Length: 489
Ligand SMILES: *Cc1c(COP(=O)(O)O)cnc(C)c1O
Image 1 (cartoon, rainbow, N blue to C red):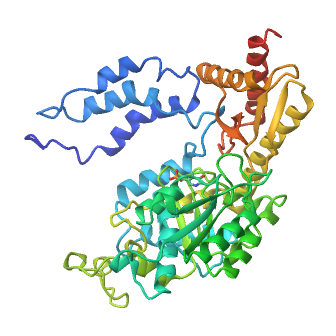
Image 2 (image 1 turned 180 degrees about the horizontal axis):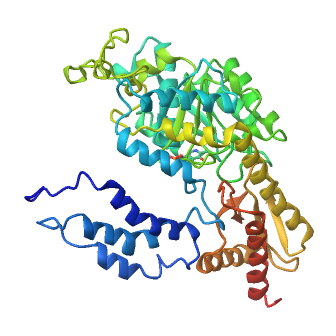
Image 3 (image 1 turned 45 degrees about the horizontal axis):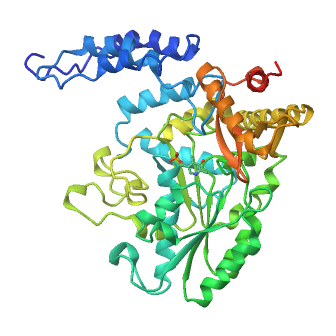
């Protein structure tokens, strides 16, 4: 093609072949992490003015290989335990590439559309979610929680004769969402987006295991009831991002039915924990909930941009999120009349069940991963990672210089360096400095948090590339840095 629009529409294997060695090099994580230290170099190469005339494919590939891929985000490196997201495994990359090329929309009668449904079904079965709940794939836990709470809002207001999706919120009654102080803040943002306001989320204190305090929950519900406030939903964390604590789901289901309200489960990270028989009982009562969020792009290591929302009542979810009929949605018609793929948007029409219209095909990623490793493969991964957290806890218990801040439930272990003679007011600063030096060294990178006010080093294991040696490596390095800083080394 000549002229200014020189977009290459062929030579795909050539382009991919060119960048694959750089990607494989990146995935070995052998070189030190230079992204931060050499920021000026790659920024200078990338932060150019908009080209009036395109440069063609070649310089783009060159920049990808030289200036971008080598400085990529190293959350897939074996020693990285900082976030609750990781880099995809090989099959996820292959599926995402296939979806980018051949599944560029999730609509129509075609395999990528069908795999949205298969992926959701497999995921529900894997996690023990009721088979008749309706699922939809979205961009991640933020939107999955928004979908669950959007359904809750629809339910709560319909019951007082109001359609919030159509008419917005009435001035009265005020309504409230109840969640522990350890809840992920996307729940508060969902309340903002749904027009309730962040302040509509009542922050309930936690017990000594970082789980919602049920007495305080009931007290808040009771106080609000006497003020005529509408209880819209209880949110149970099935694995907090701070410590991995799982709220008492069964009791919360009981309270939800007692106060006639919705129970939503935020299991974005931790719902996969149900696969580890040692903690399965913590998830009892899951089937009594009304909605749940879970992120395949976390423990399942699907490429990022893949969350799932499940809601018990499909028709209700549609009322909360449906698009109004429109001429430009011409194919959005009746499923029986499929003559060509273009006759029908697919069944179910997923764009009626979340805030997204156009969306990438995501089911293929879930399908590919579960087809590759199966339910037992995923179970083994979850158990392995939960063992990593327990391994750290046992090393901490055995070492007088270390202190456990929360007993691991899932794959997170919160601990700190604390020699016995050290004053409490110095411990936070010392551990912040340890975390800082760990990051600067770059091999073992956990994140940090506070547990009951105390500064914690917080590794979270969901990365399929991490081995037990990496786990020990982190503890060894914490000890080494801590000893050096306190002149014990
Ligand atoms: C990650 C996470 C979220 C947010 O999900 P994103 O996929 O980052 O949008 C919400 N809740 C919990 C418990 C999480 O772990």
